Image (cartoon, rainbow, N blue to C red; front, side, top):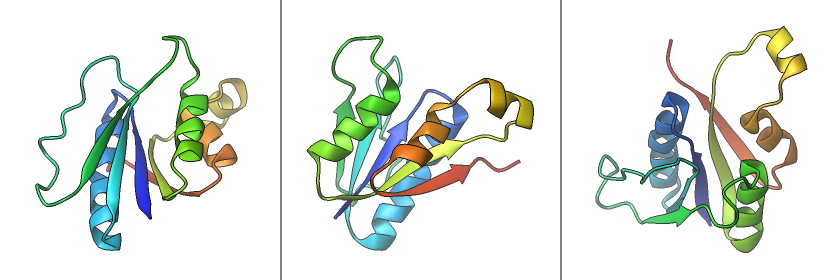
Length: 119
């Protein structure tokens, strides 16, 4: 069993990484951190006793991040939970624009823990 976190370069991504570390520690399992940012991912804030595997996004630069995350879940059958960061959106923005987090919630083959940054 392991926890996968999709880390974006937003505040939600950083918050999701911290929440995923707590979730993995609570479950006594490993953490897979998928880097969806355009830079290197800083894992120095995570607990030293937590087993963390960094996964860099592979494939074309314009590859859909949702597909990348789902492919990673498929490649790691021990993943039992996906952690994502979300932000509050209006009804209009939900109707007109899709979001990566919304699509992951709808298509993930494993349980999803969606965390929202504190107000």
